[in-house]
Length: 175
Image 1 (cartoon, rainbow, N blue to C red):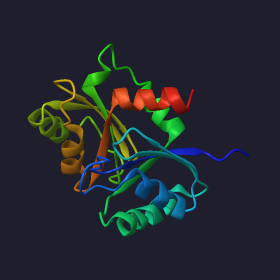
Image 2 (cartoon, rainbow, N blue to C red):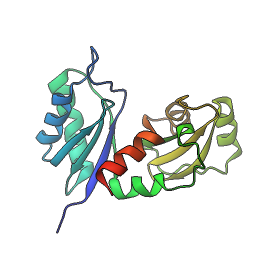
Image 3 (cartoon, one colour):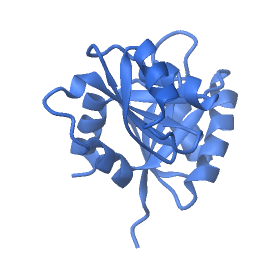
């Protein structure tokens, strides 16, 4: 049986920049955690990996990234198949307005007036959500409002990727 593929978003990573984990640090950390078929995607801390127990893998990889690089980073994960489903949520002809956010805050219900108020203050809207993920539409393309919105709503950390990045990742690895 083929193992399931997962995608990890490392929070606040810009590989190649001073003070950031390197690609080798990240790949090595996932290798230390026992992952198979590790692939980094772009230079923003996005990783594809195979694992039998992704939650345990990510816990080990978080520690290993900090040990290898000297820079602690939170890591959030999702099955690649689920990420592909999220990317299929209708987004008209403007994928550049959307961000996919991963977080540890459970499910956020978009119909709350408080959530709509918070999103409006941040110039965005919560479009869809599920356990540990959210799809946010920004008022302006590439604005990057999803992470601060979701962190405010959940009281925890989050990490986002623009929908065009997610679509490229899926086109390359899931189709």
